Image (cartoon, rainbow, N blue to C red; front, side):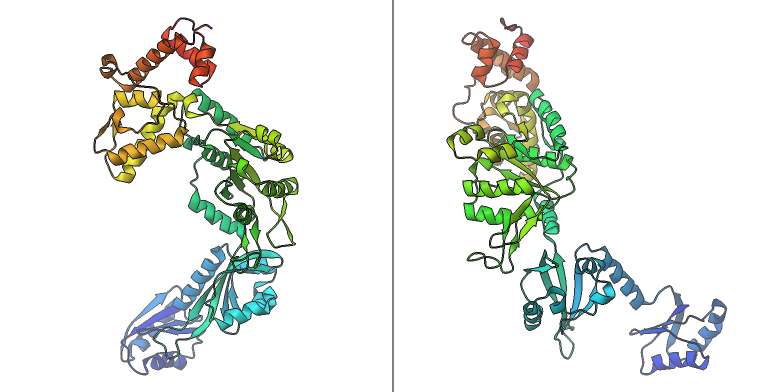
Length: 517
């Protein structure tokens, strides 16, 4: 049984309390003394003996109460700390001032390939095989910057936190440190969590036929563990499709890390993608740094604007795609990882292959599966759906009430050609919400691109009851006017840069002559 003897603090009272147990010849296995409590673990104390023992304790001057407790505070703290360490997926070790490991969690024992009892007897020099690491940590008082280390050939990012005595103690010096090891895969998972949401195909907004077809095809290719090439114009949402395919794949719980090949020069793109060793180049981080491919272990690497990748990097990527192995910059050691490559481009890679600016063998390695994301002008039925979505987001960010579109604004948005696609629409909407104080948005509130179809909104458009009827009236007027110059569904579809089937359906819907062509 464990008891808590509460008292008013005075000199010698703890000794007198323990003397009561000594007079009764009771064996005590643990004692913890606090400022106003003595916690005692007495295995042989039965419940029937407690009333008499309580009387003896109350006879000691200053004792106020005797209570039964389930566990001593120190034991409770150790249990919680053990559970906390066991729950941590990253290896964690506590080290004393001499560099000897005094505590470690199960994850640390696994990566060290030792029993926890053996690990507790090791020094940092013995564990990592680097005398310089232990010397550096001890010399800096465990206040060293993060660096990369290797343990049994596996890379880890080592972070250290000093353990010091309380500031009000006589010495106040560092007595050791806590070392945490982060595997590249774990770093990739955290980077993924910070950069991306867990949206799947539901995050792709649209109900038009081209988007429905895209989602259906994407759901199929997502389940196939092979390279995927996503093509489409700038601003169509290729990365969003890539994220959805990753989330729906068997790799969905692993990292999804992206690199824009057009945003970095060749040497930086190489180090970001493949990583580097310590001292590989001027300014390299001490200890080296893992690349995206290494951090995405088990997951997906998305290479946006793959058409902008240099021929040198194309060759290195091709080698990786062939056998899953790569070398960090400055390393002779090959590392093998398991990742899926999804790439995207707005350029015509076949034409680039013919011109010699893109490797033909790499093109065929990347183009095992392919998705084509439709432009916004090919899915006009989604324009207002997307606009309302962006309006809600923009109003939330600007802390404004939700704005609405009037009939003229709806017709203007639908009529615009949107060369910048969904990204341009988003920018136009955010700009309009930022610059206006009106609750109802008019066509004049939107800064539409030059070259968009001129708006001739007649009075019967203005009097339409809702935006659906307004759009229908506008569509019919546009088709009737253009059909005189392009008197077939195929010619008209080519003029409007959209699908023949959509134009044929619209002509049939509005009863415009020639809809059967």
